[in-house]
Structure formats: C-alpha cells, structure tokens
Image: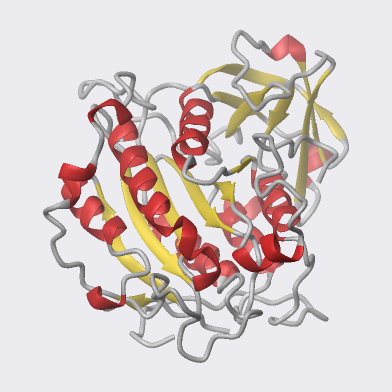
Length: 379
C-alpha cells in the first residue's frame, strides 16, 4: 500500500513575524549545541560491538522532567530478559530532526490560529544555537508537506502560517466558519493521522541524522488513512522517532460532552501502564493480517495519542484553549532534559524477530519512557 504526500509550495508570509510577542520566546533554547561539538550518535544505531543507544524521557506525575537519575535507579528488560545498562547520562548535544504534524480539519478551526502561532514560538524557542531541523505537515482529508526539513526559521514561519489555508494551495482548509465542502460533522473530526505519521517517519526522518521527534497537534481521531495505527507506530519505531502530542478535542466532541472540561484539566498523565495527489514518493510497508486500513482502534482520540506516544517513547500533553504555548513549552522542556541509554542485548534477548523493551524504576512518582520495541534489522 503506497501512501502519498501532496507537496505544496509555500508563499511568503512576511507579516507573521510582527505578530510574534517578544516575550513568547524563551531565553533558554530547548537544545544547545556549540558549533564545534561533534554530533551525538543517532539514537538506536548499534555500534560495532552491538550496543544499542536510545533516548529516554523521564518525568514526574505532572509531566515535568526529572533530573539526576542514574543507571542504578533503573531496571531494563529486552524480551523479558534483564539487561545490564552500559551507560545512562544526560543526552549530549546533537542534531534533532522534528516534524510538526498538525491537524487542520474544520473540527479544530477554533484552535487553528493558536496552532499556528504556538508552532512558530516552538520553532523560535528550539532552533537558535542548534543543529536542529524542522519540517511541517498538515493533514485533514489528505497529507500536505508544507516545508521540507530546514533550519531556516523564515521558511518554517511561512509554512506554519499556511496551515489549513486554502489560499496558499492547501487542500486541508480549516478557516471557514462552516463545514468544508463535502464535510459532515463526523468527517470534521480527525483526519489522515496515521498516514501523516507514517510518511513523516518513512519519507523524512529516516534520511536525517540525529534524534527524531514527531510532534502531533490534533484530536487523535483517524479517518480515511491508508495506513493503520500499527503501521504508523511501526514506521515511527523503525525511524527511532518518538511521538509527542498536544491533544485538543474537536468541536464535535465538546458539543457532545458539554459538562466535560475541554482539556481534561491536566497536562497529560500517559504514564507506563496507562494507556492523495502530488505523487510524493515512497510509502508501502507490510500490513499485518486482519487489519483494516479504515479501522479506528479506539473511538477516544486522546487514548489513541497516548498509545502511540507510549509505544515510541514520547508523551502526550492536554492542550487548553488559546494556551497551546504552554503545551509546547512542556514538550520542549522534556526534550531539553532527555537522557541517553546504551546497552548490549544478551544472546537470549537477541533471538527474536521483535525486541520488546521495558524500562522501570522503583522511585516513587518517576516515569521513564523509552521506545517500546525494535527489530534487529533496524539496528
């Protein structure tokens, strides 16, 4: 099965920079890497002696980063076999490739302005002084690549400002006060989420050096994807890409549950144990038997995002109306304070087509998160 991007050309948005509040940018970048510092090894790549290196995100019950952890605080298993942690330390500065994957269907039209502006702030907070690259994807009825991987802030600003804007060529317009052409109240929810993640991983991140991160901004509901949730997770794991997400309820969900806080009143809580056109090349991938490309594993988009984040070592944050900056800042803080873990799998653990990893600690209220699995050929 081949899933395609629709490639759109970005037009300038010169007025956007004037809209950015001066105080919105942090004086502390999310990643600091002096130019003379050699890039850190790409996560998940085995050395000559078979060592596997993975990024680890550790947070407390409120989703804040936990510092000062050591290898002695952790227990690692690979296919249920206890493993010896060779090294565990704060991650060294190095290039990070980040894909912003933003939903622009009309069910989130009330969030679109905040989605754009907060994404610009996230880029400006993260990019300076680093070797990082960003790319921008929007999705609704199809997947649009708005910006190829780049470290040029102005190109990213232009692309982000075009999220959901039909006047710039995107087919995923979300600015209308009414439902888009052909949209029903059901189709206004969600979009081709799994296709967007799959293509971000297989067509963009796999060819880039350094750590890989996908930031999803949406309601977590998939509709009309050619790929399944399992395909999206497997693609992210293969690219060693951690999925981080900012969850917003669609307007349809809010109307059906008017007594619920639209943003769950928290900052996440997804801890271990919880839960076409354009001819863009690539796609495909082996689909496992019995899966339907149209199926929705969970009707609750929030649980979908939690599951994908957990499986890839990322984290989900609940967004709040007009306060997406807070969610982005939470994710940036977690990324800035990651650890790097290395181990050499035992022979018993290696004898499998799929390696399932668990990382735990007995420290109360501390939650380490790492990619849950890999296949030996990925290494």
